[in-house]
Image 1 (cartoon, rainbow, N blue to C red):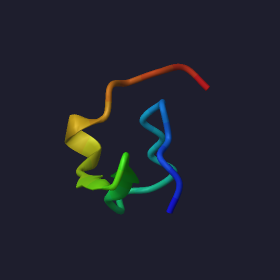
Image 2: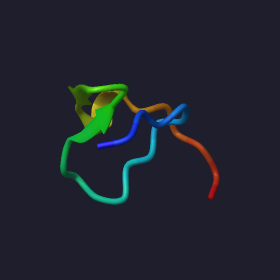
Image 3: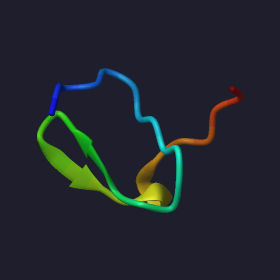
Image 4: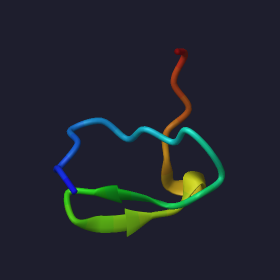
Length: 32
């Protein structure tokens, strides 16, 4: 996966952030 500069959480699934899998709770809330 590519290293995303921003934390994007499309769902409750964990995402890869710069090679690290982070939880949605760690994702800052941003307005889409």
